[in-house]
Length: 110
Image 1 (tube, helix red, strand yellow):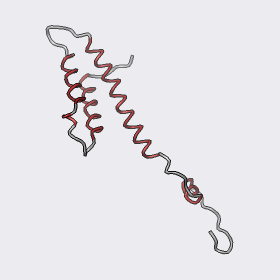
Image 2 (cartoon, rainbow, N blue to C red; image 1 turned 180 degrees about the vertical axis):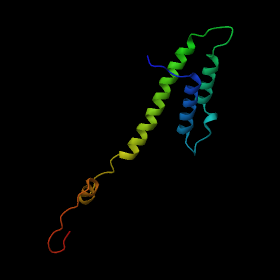
Image 3 (tube, rainbow, N blue to C red; image 1 turned 135 degrees about the horizontal axis):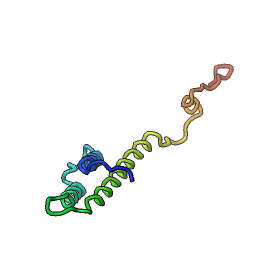
Image 4 (cartoon, helix red, strand yellow; image 1 turned 90 degrees about the vertical axis):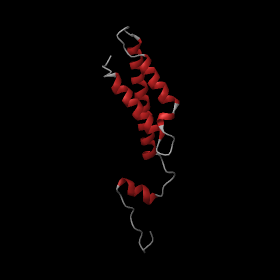
């Protein structure tokens, strides 16, 4: 298994993805149930001097997996937005996309 890094880094990454997902027009990401749940889970599974919490590694692995999912969904949406088909295009437009130009017809047509 690959190293997960620090739990704090994973938490910050999750919160960053939540902030990006909420968008500028949405309500503040700190008012969402997801934000409160993530913070509560990380606080509940931290290691204290009284106990050694084995579930912390499980939580960290799940959080890292969820962070990967959030990033992948955001990046896929950006790629889809950029390369999504715009419907049927004219032959001139298609030729321009690949760097060609259509031949001119004699008599000034085309």
